[in-house]
Length: 170
Length: 330
Image (cartoon, each protein chain N blue to C red):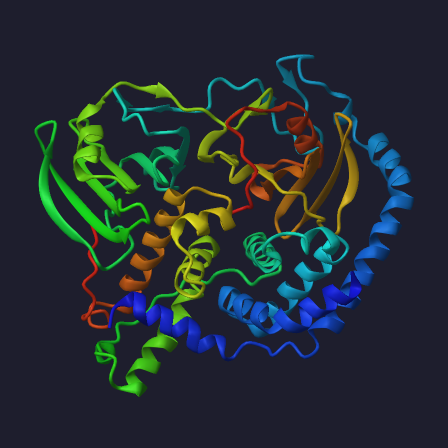
C-alpha cells in the first residue's frame, strides 16, 4: 500500500496542488490543504485505490476540506473600483493579464461555495451534475452558486470591464 | 472576451503559480504520523476524559421528554419544545409532469428580511433532468449562469413573464439538453421562477408554471427537534442543514461525513461518541451517528449556547427521511 500511495502522491501531487491553489488562492494554504487531506486518506488508501477513479475521490475530499476549513483566512468584503480601461477584446496580452489579475483578486471575495463551483466549472470543466456530486448538493444549488458568483464578479468588475460580455441579469 | 473565458483564463494562468510539490510526500508522511499518534493518544485517554466531562456537565442527565422547559447550564439559554419552526411553501403544482422525481426543499433568509424558498425535483429518466420551483420576496436574477442565452416574453396565468433558454447541445440519444427559466411576479407580490434543465422543452416548463396555484404546503425538514432556544427563527434549510437565528447569533445543525476535528474534548450524546470544542467565537459539537454520518452543531457566541446546551439539543434531534449527508457549504 505504501508504494502505491507514494506513487500516487509523487505522480499526482503537483496537479492536486494546482487544483487546491486555485480553490483557496494561497500557496501555503494549498500545500496545507493537500497535505491534510492526503494524510487523512493515507490509512484508508487500500480502499481508495480500489475505486474506479481514486484521484476524483481525493479531489472531492480536497473540495470538502476547503469548504469546511476553519484555518483558511476569512473572506474579505472588497469594494472594487471600476476599471474603465479593462474593456478588451482578448488581443492585448497586457490588458488581458490585467483582467485575469483583477478576476483572481475578486475570486477571494466570494463565499467559498461560490468559488468552489466556479473553479469546478471553469478550471476542472465539470458539468453541473458532476459538480453537484462533488459538493454533495443538487444541480440547482450549483447553478444558484454559479449565477450568484458570476453576477458578483460582473458587478465588481464594473460595466466597462465586462463591456464585451453578452451576459444578462435581473 | 466573455466573463466565462476570462475566468477560465485567469484560473489556468494562476494555476502555474501553484507550489510544485517537491516536499509534498514528506509533509504528508509527517502529518500522517502525527495523526496516527493522536488517534492512539485519544484511544487511551477517552474514557478518563469522558468520565470527567460527564461529571462536570449536569445537563447531560437531561433526556428529552422530562419537561417542557429545562435549565440549560451556565449560559442560561431557555430551551423549550418548539412549535413548528419550518414555514410553509406558498405554492402547489398540480398536476406535475410524470418525469419528476424525489423532491426536496431549500429555504434561505437574509438578515435584511428577504426570503427565498425552493422546491427542487430531480429525475434521471429519460436522461438527467431537474425542475425547481422558486419563490422569493425579491426579484430573482434569472441569469442561468452562462452568457450564451436567449430570452423572450411569455405569459403565465395571465401575468407577464420572461423565458430564458440556454442550449447545451444534445445527448447521445438525440434529446436536446438545455436550461430553461420562466420568471414572473405572482398576484401575491412574490417573485416566482420555474427552472428546469436536461432534455426538457419550453412547453413542459410553461405547463408546470401554469399549473402552480397559491396553496401552501408544509416543507419537509431534515431534522426535528425536541428542544430549541425559545426565540429561534429558521434562517437556512436544505436537506443537510438547518440554521437558526437565536439571540444575537446563529445556531446550525448539519449532517456531514465523519471528520476528525482537532482540539476537542470527548463527550457522550445518548450513547453516541461525540466531541466538543470552543474557539474562534463558536462552540461546536460533533456527534458520530455511524455509517460515516456525523451530526455537527455550531453555535456562535452570540447565541449564549454552551457545550452543555448543544449536548441537550443534540439528544433531542431526530433525523427525518429528508436528511442527506453533505459537506458544509459555509
